[in-house]
Amino acid sequence: MRRRSYKKELGCIACKELGELGAGKPGWVVDNPNLLSAIDTHSILLANRSTILLLSWSDSHQSPLRIRPDLSPIDAEFISAVEWLVFDDIRVIVAGTSSGYLLIYSLRAELIHKQMIYPGRVLKLRVRGTKKDLIQDSSSEEFCLIMPGVIARFDGSVVQNMLQKWFEDAHPQFQNQKQKNQDSEDFENSPVKLPFQLWNIGKYGTCADAAITGIMPPPLMEYQSSQRYYCAVAVGDDAVISAYRLSEDKGRSLVGAILSKVVPATFSTIASFSKLIWRSEKTSPQKSPKKSEEKPQPFARASPLTCIKDHPRKGEKLTLSPSGTLAAITDSLGRILLLDTQALVVVRLWKGYRDASCLFMEMLVNKDTASSSSTYYEPMKSDYCLCLAIHAPRKGIIEIWQMRTGPRLRTITCAKGSKMLQPSYRFGASMSSPYVPLEVFLLNGDSGQISVLNRNL
Image: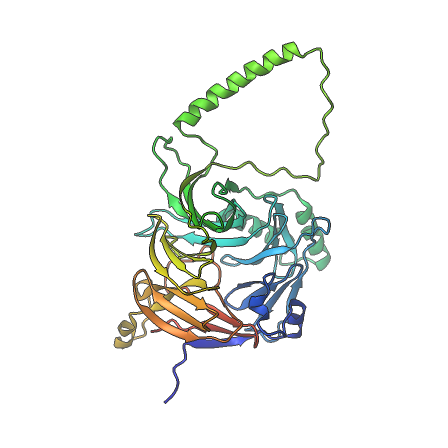
């Protein structure tokens, strides 16, 4: 009797270039806190503090691509986050640094864009989007940088337009290589700044992870306008879970609107009176700020909604479902909390999962519909159910649980030193068939094997 396999082998990324990242030692992928990873459908990014490696398992003839960002030795700057940005016809590599810089590279290791976001370490890069359907009354595609107590949000269309312009200017179809390099350098040095929103979510302490879960209605007594409000969930040491309402602009409530008119007038009167009194005195010379120092963008308004404090429990990692309505949160006591991000209520709890990691995936449950039909049947979104994959490295297993309150569907054994990965959201993905379900990949660091978890029950 043939043994049932719950994984499908895709390929291997083992190569000598991995030695730069520490390959060769057992558990090098999971034991090194400075090793970063991000996966796409056919390629994977692995990075340490100074180097990014692009490896492909589908094309054995493609040599690894090495990217070495220009980091500041004075500030001891290092790479702190990596991710893919995938549009319809554009794929780029994104990196965040410990000094708060956003770096975007092409698949030829060309620097497309560099921008200072906020002074601080970039903890994570998040790419997500929701489509307008029967459940979601609006659509949103965004790219976010998570820092300790700070969230920066870029609109997906803004990033896409910038990338399209760069590829059109730097890589026309009939242009020699010398002109390409010159255009790329000119674009790189141009003062192009992507607009973004910035929020301070550190009211309950610095966060270890955070995410914007979706669009939410405005609060009472607020001006009804076209501005959007977002809900953000953060986890950290002081507050296991905290939630905020993020305003798209720096607008105030009704009381704030009144104060915004009264306070400036009062301050102006006081300032004018002070000038009359101290006019004869010389003002002390002020040092002009250095041109190289970039002032951070002012924060937009973030209103706290709720928080859960349970010392000594600390929130560690956060994973969002595709719609953003559920979040799986791991803590320092080996528990996993399933949070309803709309009601802000914990709806499920797992215990005994220390050092665990979670990813949402979709399993094909209505397989009988496809098998009973005589013609070829392409599964639709309604044929899949949302599940949560929990990797428990101390147990050496991956468990798949049906959401929200369903049973455990499967237990998969995995080798020590393995890590679960998932491709980022693809901007502009069509809702038409065939539907592409949410999958989970598995990297075996010791062997270099890449596999995907089977989605059929």
